[in-house]
Length: 170
Figure 1: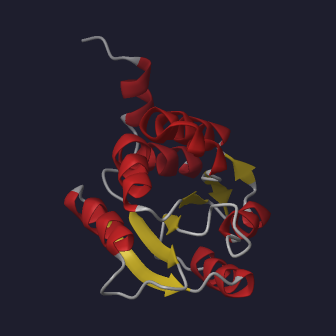
Figure 2 (figure 1 turned 30 degrees about the vertical axis):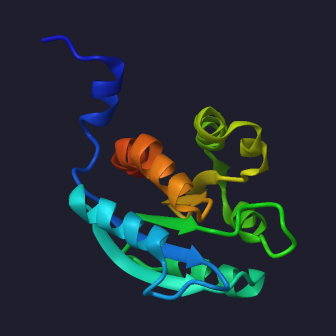
């Protein structure tokens, strides 16, 4: 049987991974955080474990502290952040995440913006979605809107999460 290159690369990937989920927002609560809930539900529905879930304010120090703590824990293979990736004064998630990344997965942001452009048009240029590797963990940061989270999770994160984690482990 012939396998595609994609299948060959993914065959050694773990079947499931453990993920920390962070919602960055000054206004969301556990009850109103529909994007964070969607991320957690989709992860679990695809056989992954949600190691932890937090809501943190749009404050660079708080984001950095929590992200650093989670990257130091042994119970997670990845961290997914949603929110704070825009260009308003309060949006600082990109700056914090970029500082901790040892390797940037350029294609993630590029393809996310391309897919976003197909849905929302030129407003996609304001997205600062980013992904990379830090301390042998995948770190992914996406906008907090429900549509953006659905797009990122369904089209990029769920299809490639175990592949990324497996590649880091090599």
